[in-house]
Length: 285
Image: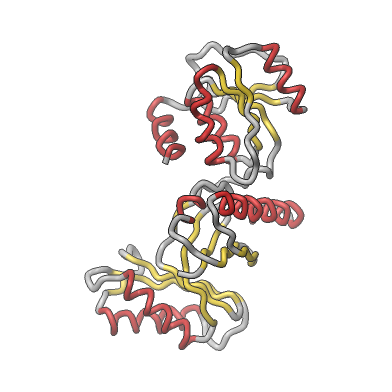
């Protein structure tokens, strides 16, 4: 593998101005996340895709924490000539498909070529049957070879890894997040997923959750505040200092809700314990 093909979803639905701004933020967050772990790869923008030119297995876990990414695939970059891309596809198939596996070939194509997407799927699929002996299953294949043809360049992959979705941190506003326990982390996570920059206020022993906030707050430095106990006066001072008008808390329906003259968001009110346990698994990883 020599690069990573990154897909985003919700960003593509925005107006041209908002879309470009969100793409810029996403690319900046990806660069920041990779550099924080010692990687300095080049990043290229394609229509509806972002390409990281370079690959290391450690990048997979990093990109799983970048909001705005719907999915991504480590891939081989090659020429958009049928014989060349067929040759590279077979190389990848031999590494990822067993004889006992069923498979499918999915091709997407943009640009002018002497072949169609269907031509590519038939050519590569026939060669896999011939060379490996696997059976084609276009409904529920065990393995899939993906081929994304972009004008003169083609990206070939066999894995489609889920990202966290949402929009990139920094594309939304800024909120103060009150963190008294893990529920505060979960509430912050939901607002980061909507693009918000978080100013966390850790109450008493909850400062142990700082690492979790930092893991998901890609592209933006976390500037935490610490209080020994909840204080409305001190929270008001933090809001004023950061020029923020909104608060996020992890309170649920059973808690005694904090009072504030500012707008307070309580995103966990509709969740039960089972829901929160599932969210916790995602956040902790």
